[in-house]
Amino acid sequence: MGKNSRRIALGLAAASAALMSATVSARAESVTLGDGLTLDYSGYVRQWLSTNLSEMPDTVAKDRGRLSQARSQLRLDGGLTGANFKLHGSGRAVKEVRTGWQHDLKGQGASAGHDMTDYYDRAEIRELWAETGLDRITLRVGKQQIVWGETDFFTASDMVHGFDYSWRAMLETENEELRKPLWLVSTVVQIPEAKGEVQGFVRPGLDRGRDLGNSYDTWGGRWSPQPYRGYYRDGIISYDADHPDGDKSTPTYGVRWRGDAGNVNYSFLHLRTFRPDPIVNVASNPTGHTPGGTVGDDYHPVINAYGVTASGYVAPLDAVLSTEITYIPDMPYNYDNRGGNGLYPLSAVTAGQILRTDAGVKNADLVRAMIRSDFNVDLRRFLFTDKTSFLSFQVFDSWLPGFDKRDNLLYWPGFQTKLKQHGVTATGMLQLNYFHDTVNPSLATGWDASYGGAFVIPAVDFVLGDRFRLRAEADLFFAKGAQSGTSDSSRDVGFISFFQHNSQFVLRGTYQF
Image (tube, rainbow, N blue to C red):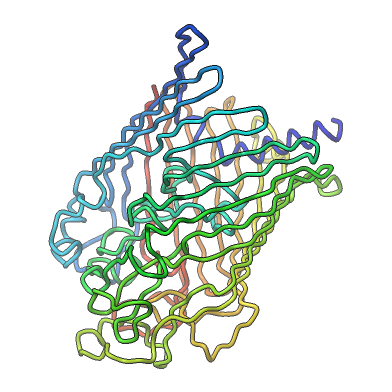
């Protein structure tokens, strides 16, 4: 196989693992209407069923073997393409059935005693945009998604949009199902003389507060971090989308140069966007204005990010290597000088000890870096696969170059863990194919080298004819230092520790039309 053919084949294999679930989830149809008009449409009906695999120390009822999720979803996509324009719309309707286990969480105090399905049920327009082109310029206006970045599990520069992690954490295979679309004006200007293009967008500030940044389960549901399952965090921490440092109506923007240099694809970018994860405006030491919550308000401050990405085929390794580096000056963090007790341990709240001035918000420069390698490996002799398999490794680091442990920056508000200078996470993925790509096992793994903990996700995707798809998946978490209760003062809680005792078995069925 020639060099170019090998590079193309390997690149396609690398893309196939990320795109496989998406490509089997939509069965596009086209109708020619005449006068140069084409109508495209697709959709699916999907059902999730999740079962707890562990007993949880922060709940009072039995957990193992009980249904944690029964979610139904309808998705419709449609587009109209003409000679010099395209219209696109996408909608999604979700309905969940409250399980007996969720009812028990409600009785424990989750969702303030309200029906927990109210947090999940919704019908929404996911995308609605119009696009036109003139010579080298393409202009798109409306509600849309923009993806800038190379990372898979953890984002470095893919920060245009936030993600909704409240109903499935970060475990859904298609990021577009979790990504929050925004109302944007975006453009692409082709510059073939320089073998590249300029991409840009402006967000005028028309979005709702809940559309900004990452969202998490804060009402004590199935993806609340241990030990807060069954605990209504929203009762003490409100959400503020009008904070002076993170006002939803504040315009944001981004610009990126994307080009080719020989065998390397590269980009440079600048983003002015919202901090992906929220921080707390502490009531005892407010920043910007006085919060409304008893302990404080969650908010997403506006930040600046500067990044570079690159990817290309490396012949001696027979691999596609990718890297991404993002610099965020003055990244806001919560801090706590009170001996590592966190911003709002439940014991301090109930004892009325939350009024203190040694917690608040500080800024620190942050560098996020990622390197990934994608391989084709021939396992046919050992695992009897139909063809070569896809193997990928990724290492991600969050580095604080001016780190001073006396700043007492918190890893996550509400937990006692202090930030370290480096936060290193490694992930891997293996994709296999059998029976002419109709049975496709996979294995995803991750290890938090800095804060401890690991996850293992074995799965099998079944292609059942043209319209049916089935995925069986186990989400297995092995955490270090997880808090067993709200009064526990563990200082070793990392992101994976949030999911301790929350391993799940998931079935996902899709009918596409």
